[in-house]
Length: 333
Image (tube, rainbow, N blue to C red; front, side):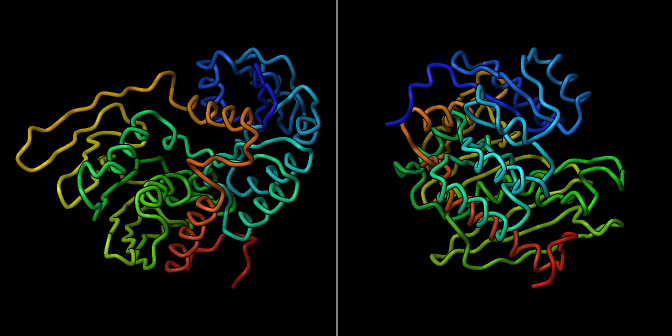
């Protein structure tokens, strides 16, 4: 059995944009309390803590990991730091929710997962759409056979960013590019529906800084299922997902990664629209899943288990290998 955790006391490692979004999400949970933040500078820790009314502020990640008043830590640093920061917290005995992409590559994912399992400490990837009520409902419908055998998925996620070669999105040193920033969402969706692919065909445009500015991927599976995905950070895309089955389809018409409604269509029947808007900003649901797991004594989530997270990162590696895209420090395999 897990501990009681009447109130789960959260710490946030990092003080950037995504950390603020997660902090806002936590405020929607009555049984969660944001008690600490850790940054590499006192000034940024204080500024973040003042904005979100956080009592404990640390000027190093190590100090946050050692804080005895923190039950669990959300890692919100840039991609190349995820493994290092996650391992730091796990070795301090702190459960971790690590922002997506889980790690820069599969070797790093293996290391983080190994530490969590050796230490017996909870670890989960923060793929927040997986936990919202709408996607839970979609999974129920698929499991019930509402559209028959699921055969195909199409999904995209892309946006038009400004051109800043030193910024997180375009800088290879920071793990930049569309795939790890937003492409991971449709890849994770395909994993949720079909599992790991057996075949991958992909193509990317690598821009001036050497990272993928836009990309298209087809993931194939042994029973013939196909996922057709595309992503971008320099091109706006529709943010639409369609799951196609032998007897019907499910359409998420707008912003499928932060959805409020979908339509179930079956031949010979009137379309059924489901309105399932999230409470809060949606990030509260992944935090609630962490709290549930901690209270039940689980070391990983059965909604997004660590083996699936590893598989998703392996798929991202296979896709990047087709483009010849490696990040500094990854070496050559």
